[in-house]
Every structure is written in structure tokens, then in C-alpha cells.
Image (cartoon, helix red, strand yellow):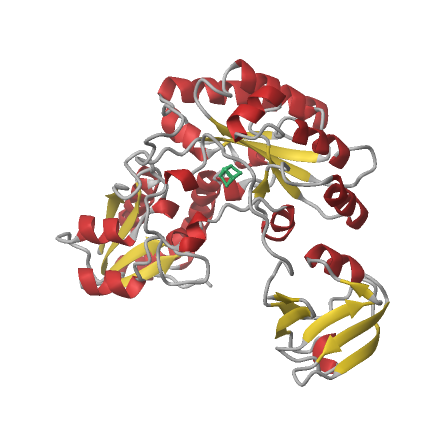
Length: 449
Ligand code: SF4
């Protein structure tokens, strides 16, 4: 938490400069080189020096001025109670597609917080709209060389952007991209478009892609993801779900731009998220097309990566553990969202082909909590899992994907804990990392960690 007198230190790394100087958890950082520290941007910038005067306040109020000589980019080895070292900035938009507006009442307060903070973009990869950034903020990003900055474009048509973001300044905010991408800025950006049917698709999408290519090489990638529509849309802007034909058109447009951009710039740049390929029933692009999986967090290339990693590990296990596979006897179950169910089922069947005594049941969980149109595993709730698996054969263990847990926690979106699921379903629950190596190891009973 930031106090008027400084930033409370919550962690001191073992063997770090801070530990050597007896800086402790609970101490406050007051100044570096006699300068106040507004937030994490300032901190990151100021510590990049080979000589620092660091003013610390100890728990008893005593102040220490520490004279530190270090390598230029060497870290002090401290973290703060508030990772941002400042209050989180709320978004100033009212987007027609906002998922937070489509959540039922009564969930955890933090889930309703609408942030739009460029500092979180840099720290955690959040996507920001740039609507609440001042010119001074852009100056700091340029001065401190903070990148990548992830930008939610939605469209490059200023008027349409105002309409989609429910903010009359949203069109003008695009000019900030020009500054970030000016010659020699050295700032890298990634972009995202949440596609809404009959709003920013078709000719508008084509225009956006064309406009955004002008920002290459600063802008390294742009993902196009379909809008998520929950069942709680009463009173909200009328948005329709995409169908197979729509998905085919989106993929065709994106793939034709990928060819063009690749010929000119050597990157594929614009990416359709996995959901489009599921919806169109088309095979997933080859790994090279994802430019190093730069947009994995947006669901772009996750399935290709999963399939390739699984195959690699599968072949390795086949070659190295033939006896184990013959005798490996287990009965387990997997639960997953509707979207990836066919893929997980296919991989489980593949494992069973080479393990004659293995029995894996894969269950597709329908998202009744948010509505059936929400098909990703990451938005599944504990109550749906419990309700839909209540009388099912689950075997010795039920495996759930890691992405339905809050990061570092053991509870799901609806606060149901893993232990609640275990108790209600009377089964041990295991968590699978969402990668193909782990899934192959888990299914075939090999530990290759
Ligand atoms: S920027 Fe738009 S989508 Fe994001 S939180 Fe704000 S209103 Fe919701």
C-alpha cells in the first residue's frame, strides 16, 4: 500500500542488494536519488543507475540513507505491497461489449473492478484503451522506454471507436498510438480487437487491419477475438453471436492479410483467436504462423501449442516407456469447457490407444452460470462442475485445467474451492497445467517434470 510517506516493502529477495543492506519487509522506500517515486514506472526508471542514494524508513521511524553502487541494470531485490506503487486507474469507458457488465450480481467485489491502467499493461500484460492516459503519461512511457504496451484498439475508425467504447474521447485517444510508434521511440506494442457482429467486422475490420499495419514494426501483433456474450445482457447494447459462416469470413480476411504482411515485413502480425477456428470447423494454423505465440494470453495459438506439445511428449513417452504403457492401469476423468472438449477428448483417446489398461472419461461442462455461449474453460464455475458431474463415473481422480483457478489460489470464479469439489463429488481433484507436455504426462502416468 502506498502511504503518504512512501511505499511499503513486502518482499526482500534472498542474496539481493536489499538483503545485504538489511532492508526488511515492512520498511518503506521514501526516495531514490532525492526524488519522490510516484509509481512503479518511476521506480523502475530510477533504479537503473550504477549509483543510488536510497532513503528507507525503518519500522521504528528511523530513516536510513543508503549509498549503493551496483551494476546499471542490477535489481535491488525488493517488491512492494502494492505492485503498482499507486492507486489503480479505473477505466473511463462504457464499452458495448464489456464482460464485467455481463456478470451476474453477487460475485466477489474485485471481479467488478474495471481497470484501464497502462502501468498494468507493462507489468501484467493487461490491454488498455489509452482513453484515460494523459500526454504526460505518454511522455513517461517514451522517456522510460516502457514496453510492451498492449492496446485494445477495437477499431481505427475514430467515430466507431467512440461508439464502441461509449467514450467521446476514444477516437482521439488513437493519436497516442502515433506518438508511441513515432520513429525511434523504441516502444513495442501489441493490439487487440474484440469483434462485434455488424459493428466493427467486415469492411470496418479490413480498414482497421490496413490502418494498423502502418504501425509495424512498433506494433508487433494484433489479435482478433469474438465478443463474449453471457446470458446477462438485459438492457445492454444488442449484440449477436457469430456463426460458422461469419467465422469463415473473419479467418479468410485475416489469413489473406497475414500473407500480405508476411511478404512485406516478415511477420504474420494479425491473428485470429482459436475460437474462430473452432467456430468455422477449420484446422488450426501451423506453429510458425503464430510468430512465437506472441498473443497466447488472448487465446491465440493455445490449441496449436497444446497439440504440438502433446505430440512431442507422446512420442517421447512411446519411445522411452514402452513397458510402463503396457501395464499402466488407471481410471481418471477430465472436465473441460465446451470449446476445447473435442481436442481434449481426442488427446485422451490417443493416450488410451497406447495404454490398454487406461480408462479416461472426458466431460464437457456447459457454462450455465454465465450462459451456454460462454465456452472457454477459464470461465467455468465450481457450481456448474459439481452439478454436472454429480452422478458421473469419475474414477480415482478428476483432473481440472489450471486456468479455471484464480492465479495462485485454490478457488474458482464463484469462490467454490477445490476442496468443495472434492467433498461434493467424493473424488480427489488434480490440476493440470494447460500445456500439452503436462497433459501427456498426466494421462500416460509419466512424471517428466
Ligand atoms: S475498457 Fe471497456 S471492456 Fe474494459 S473494463 Fe472498461 S468498459 Fe469494460
